[in-house]
Length: 273
Ligand SMILES: Cc1cc2nc3c(=O)[nH]c(=O)nc-3n(C[C@H](O)[C@H](O)[C@H](O)COP(=O)(O)O)c2cc1C
Image (cartoon, rainbow, N blue to C red; front, side, top):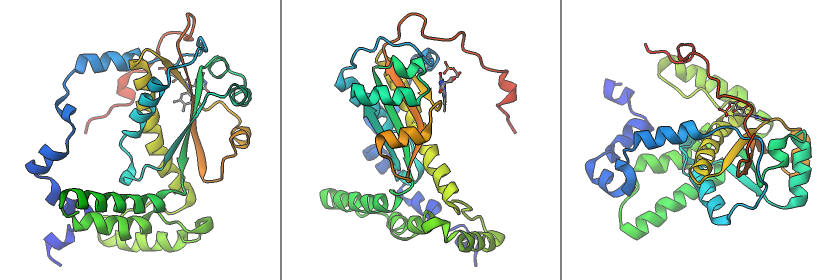
């Protein structure tokens, strides 16, 4: 096997699409956004707020912020997330109770239940293929073969851990043996890996949502202080809908933050090698 073949994989094959023509066509109009100070101000302005005025949030603002969540980067673009916007006073009250009656939940105008889904990767591979087909029909442009193979074959293999993680030992063996000879994906092997995989992408969407609300003058509190079993029961969630966090959202009222924003010395966390 030549050195070139050895490096052949979906990532290197997709490099054929990295050209100036595609750059012009596919990057959104704001791709040259350069407002570092404005962005840093937004990041600094977000705080976890625990006291809200409870008044309704205009639906178009809520929609835009949730849509900002959907623009988050996500693994294989499979978008295995779900957001349930809870505005019903009865369900909100029940959920707030399941969130240990914390004021961030009790006083929020709405609660957004953020979920990672481990049952959607297959259907979303199909959706990706449908999107490619639609794009081809509309533009006459061929989808790169590597992208088709990825969603037809590779992703359905990589993300399939089988019922009750039944394929785990076999997948572990395949990855371990292949890994002796070349860089190989090692996860997901178990259902727990798959859950972690989906949660990562959902958490990125959550941050987008929180920043977007702040940009529109609203505040949020991410919460994992809840009784997950009760929350799942209230919402009738399946075993494939994993709670990532619940966001309390609303207009902050005075006294909404516990104290200053404390962060430890950055040397603890940021390493350069
Ligand atoms: C996953 C997650 C779970 C959290 N759970 C709660 C919670 O249940 N209740 C709460 O008051 N704050 C919760 N927080 C907020 C954190 O306490 C807060 O982000 C942290 O103290 C830093 O403060 P800041 O967000 O104002 O920078 C949570 C944050 C995250 C990311």
